Image 1 (tube, helix red, strand yellow):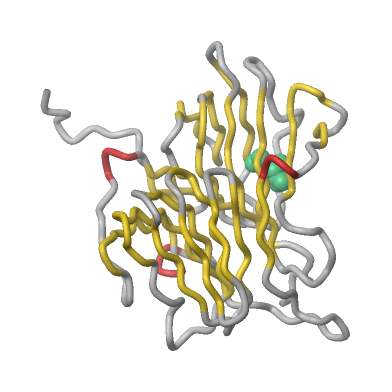
Image 2: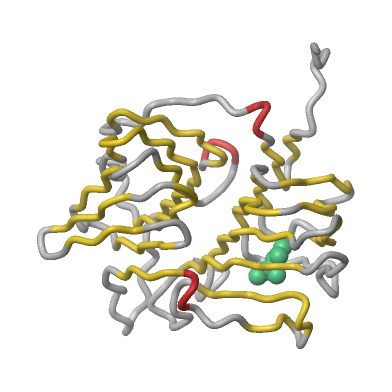
Length: 248
Ligand code: UGY
Ligand code: MN
């Protein structure tokens, strides 16, 4: 049925809800046999870009932008990819992830049809701290921590939390009915991909029903709260800038 121009998607000054009915695919430079849904970028006010890459078997992601050095973080949503650098080779399955520091030449090739959540961001060095090296892992090997003691809300931090990293990527899993215990307002911005389940997201002064497949961008200081609804857990992958002074 025709939707008469209606969508749950919304684009506001301090947040964006990007639902699959509004996704437009594009091919980024260097990408082969694949397409990207760019969810957020500096064009919309973010300091990072996040996209979902959809690769056919044998498809490749291509390098980060040639004129803007950037770190890259990849989380495998579906399928499997081979990650090769000059010195290493590994396959990454769903729930697996990799951090690739700025300037590290690498190739990411789909072994089977694959979907990847990709975050790219210029690195913000910290005086006296060495920049991080490449890292790969699997979410299943990361310990979960109860957020503010709530065992119905588990957080897994995929990257080490030391000052070398200028961003974090976590998964958060809510049992049905669990919610953030407070409305958060903070300097960090977020890129969020709903992986499973759904619920209600408060963003700014609006409350949105959200479900697996949706993407949300929250600008710095965007009021935010989530409550999980339904009979299965809700889970999302969430990016935030981290570990740096607000003055840059
Ligand atoms: O890490 C966070 O700021 C997280 N609790 N925010 C969120 O889930 N919207
Ligand atoms: Mn937050």
